[in-house]
Length: 95
Image 1 (cartoon, helix red, strand yellow):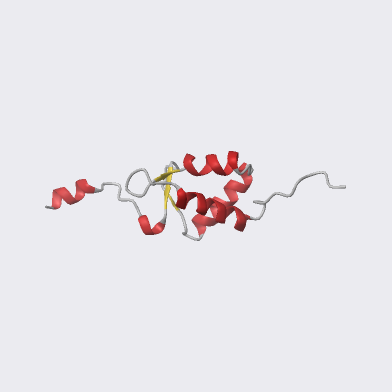
Image 2: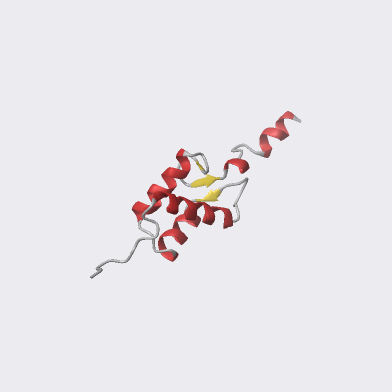
C-alpha cells in the first residue's frame, strides 16, 4: 500500500531543470532582471513543489552559474543576459 504520492521535484536536478524552464519563459522586467516571485510562484503553487525542493533546485542552478542571483535576493538573471545596475546612466556620462 502506498501512502504518499511520488514527488516529481524531489531530485534537485529535476527541480533545477523546471526552475530554469520557468525562468526562460518569464519576460525580464528591466535589463535582464527576472523577479524571483515570477519563478517561485509558478513552481510552488502551479507545480505543487515544496519550498525545500525549490531551495535545492535554485541552489544547484546558482552553484552551476546557470542562474545568477542579486545579493538582495529579489531578482535573478540568466548569465547571457547579465543586468547592468547603472545601465544607461554610466554610458551617458562617458559620452
